[in-house]
Length: 313
Ligand code: NAD
Ligand code: UDP
Image (tube, rainbow, N blue to C red; front, side, top):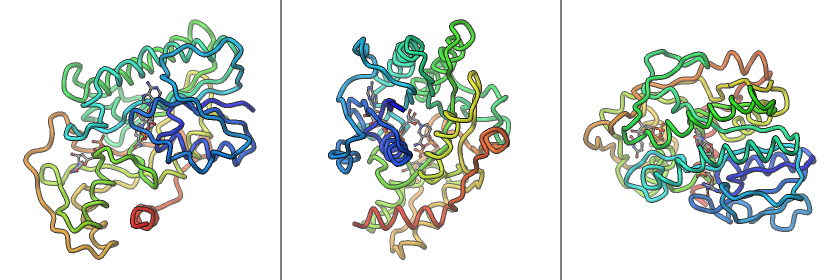
């Protein structure tokens, strides 16, 4: 099949391209490199099954571009306001790619009768009042807070896809991705890479708040398999949570990384928790298990060991 991946030079997008090529497909990666990097796809340069176009996902496709599937992953993804690659530093780009971008890409897929997948996020649940989060939970999200440029544009992206499915018969599905980590994570301020960098450089682990907030971390190869399963086995109009349901406090994440790296770094507690930072997060993946036959296989410890080896190189 001919498959397009927007955000193809990003962390998840580049791993998705790798896996799709391995599965025998021809892949076109599209990326404007706003947070991604050509380094992530350098190894694909000579592959006859891969092509890359540097372009904005808001731009229309050439009329003669034909494809069978479109994965829309393009979007900044980090909430760290101190980092220039975060969605807080790129608010307009983030809102546009998840709203206007999702709209025009849905149209492009519809025109060609291609299947469409939108990469949404656990952030649509906001600071959740239901725990763990099921796909049926509608969330607790601020429309105007600092995270809203991401959370609300992903929510609107979901509305767009659902409307194209309902009214135009787009073959579209949504995955809500929970925190994912692994090699090629951008240096964009997200917690796992910040902590690994701190551990390896001997600088303090910058824990925000008291570290009792929780997250559930999924290794990238598991996530990519889930995303592909949602495209191939998932039904049009459906939403699937994808993530690892093992839940950890941020403090225990720091301690685990300290242990695995034999680091001398201290743990520092920086100020209060940032505004609207979810206090707990854990996916209910019963639907993905039942409908996609998918669940993660790699434990946090196993995945962190792989990321640490990669980051040390
Ligand atoms: P990433 O920043 O590595 O990848 C995003 C890619 O999209 C980058 O290469 C960037 O340059 C590209 N991009 C952004 N705007 C673009 C535009 N207008 N046109 C073309 N390219 C554009 O981040 P990631 O972690 O790989 O995230 C990929 C997707 O998964 C995002 O949509 C993100 O919201 C979603 N997601 C990721 C996680 C996670 O933990 N990694 C969690 C939830 C959701
Ligand atoms: N966090 C932290 N130190 C950092 C970066 C993040 O303590 O250097 C915390 C952050 O406040 C949040 C959690 O780690 O509670 C996960 O943050 P991340 O930026 O990875 O993404 P989020 O899950 O909040 O979207």
